[in-house]
Image 1 (cartoon, rainbow, N blue to C red):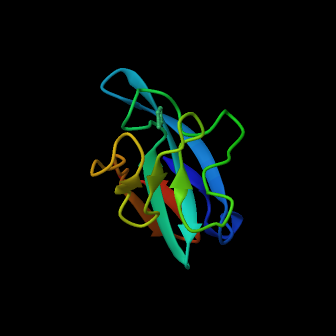
Image 2 (image 1 turned 45 degrees about the horizontal axis):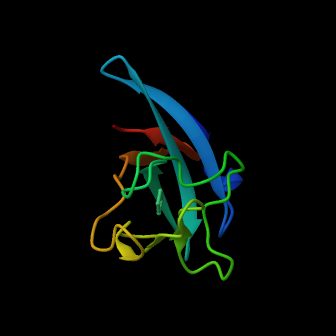
Image 3 (image 1 turned 90 degrees about the vertical axis):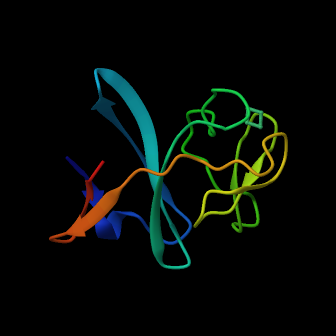
Length: 108
Ligand code: FES
């Protein structure tokens, strides 16, 4: 499944997507941080809530971390590791992606 054109995910920006896995919908997002593309499930590791408020806002105000809007858990953008907040030490679930023909594809 094609997610989005590679150039459509600018530095510090994200694009949300949804796909089906074993009959269930999974919400995810792809983001670019320090030039690198990452993709995670849009689900906090504290409670099963989306990280954003449906507004595609995943980065902290300073742009250095991913943040859960509900209780403020802070995640490392590349590894997905929670470094502060109620789920400290847990990690966002990565989604496998691949870059092909100028686009980002789901490889999961
Ligand atoms: S639901 Fe994300 S920090 Fe509580």
